[in-house]
Image (cartoon, rainbow over all chains, first blue to last red; front, side, top):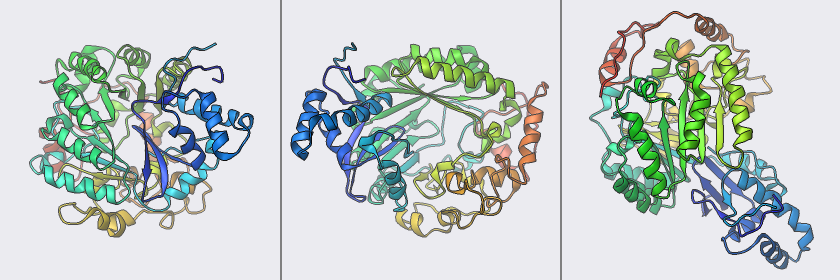
Length: 96
Length: 406
């Protein structure tokens, strides 16, 4: 998974939205709802099909004043899980 | 359904979060059974046995739109459109458009035989997000026999193609049972061939029609074991390509299903005639009376109706559930199954090995090991009237051998 290239984006069937009643970000898909914590929401909102994972990590590191290396594994884990559930794609992915 | 399996550290704490959010008490998901009409006659249909009584009593467009508005206000995030065959409703694109405009995630469960590329385009335009196509078997002759509709197989193949062409991520679901379980490998191959991103292989749940036809549907233990192995191998093989869900019949499980994550907790069904139900099978529970959206707001129904409160939480649980460490996992199992098999909706689900009524399940399983031919009924208005007017319901069912029509 961590070798994936390209810019991740949400699958066509997945929708990210703010739930005003519960005051949470949620990711909706045919079989369910994933309630996101703020860090998950921050990662997903950057998965726009243009930014690479490296750029996403850098942007998050800047935003939260953290070390990129400290975030990287977390971000990959999270993205990997969403890929596995079919909720996230790497459109130009080339596996090494 | 709200899943609770995030494990990565970016979502760490989300599992606990999901539970907390669930317990805020707002529903997540609304099932809109927009019609009971259907060109198919699947003998395990989840519609009520007595659906024929309500065929002419469907909610109108403006009533559904009001239901959707009330649902969105009540915290619902997903609207699932099902039936019967939802494509029979001319206003379906309008209803989906209304749900979409309210910010709801929309999902369609269809038999597909009525889908045209024009309609698929309209649904896409209306904002439909999820598309689920039902199949009955891997081979045309057997699939059409189970569905009770000649020519349905090729129409479904076309629907799969048309749906993907319109830009939907195709989900396929196949109800598994004694008559098709041995072809699970072919069913998986068919879903791959038709381009499904997800395949749900759920064994029939023996309520309503499926209970009536249980002897025809309930597989043998050997069938279930073989199918589980095939499904597990396919899951590994298709990882990242097609998401495959396999649900064994709860008759063969040790403990009951955590039905709906709890009664009146996350799910809400409104059926064709406006009845509001905690679960689509719940109207089989004749000891409860269910409210109708024509008479009450969804908010009143969800928070204040007796039917929705009756089995909410764990306070009502009987023994052996009350002192069971699993009570917060399965909430005593399925209320509909408890009622249908014990005549007490407040009993422990007999599917649980700890239930004092578990012998009812064991008897059915023993029967499943015998090879005698049994009669069964298609789901259609004539059978609906016959079965629902017969009081008390005859068991085992004694019916004429059905012939496919259509």
